[in-house]
Amino acid sequence: MDNCNVSRSESRVSRSGQVATELMLYSGVFLIIVISVASVLYLLQGSDINSLEYSIVKETAESFSDSINLAVRGGQTFSYYYNFPRTVLGGGYSIIFTKSSAIVHWQGSRGNMSYSYSIAPANFTFNGCVVSLQGGSAGQLDSQKGQNLLIVTNNGNGIELMQPGCS
Image (cartoon, rainbow, N blue to C red; front, side):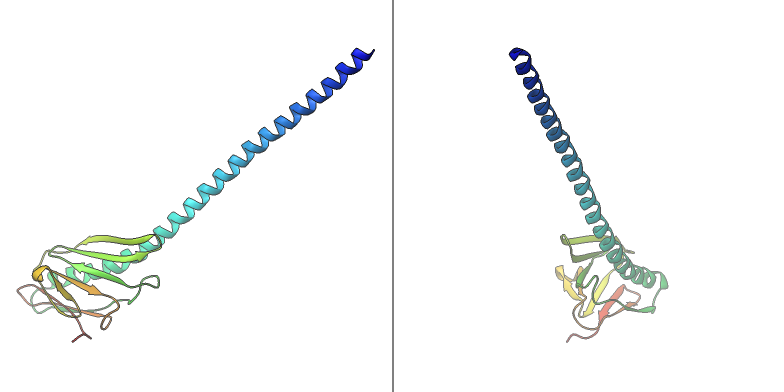
């Protein structure tokens, strides 16, 4: 009878050990699933923020390129006054105008960002706060300087970009 009691108690200990092992295994798998779901949700939330930032900056930069394209198509003596926002999402930005593109630079939530937009090819002259770069072949507008006004004029020989407010 003693052998029978020992066998039963070993069986109970064995079953208790098996139950504990299964519980730990299931808990581990459940924990991995929870961490994976949380990670995916975190990454999706970050991409939504980037998408929102990009959309707002894109709209602002497209307004600059639309102003220039309008002046090119408007012909000689056409002028357009564009009141631009000083900040995008609480931060300043800059736009570099080249012969055929406008490149916007801004500080996004994940670091420095930039994007290029096509504009109608033209010879540019830069005045006021729009700083001439590369010997006059490009110009840079800083949204934090001068007035938040860009005057775009087609003078027959090219496009003049002027931001008043700087000496």
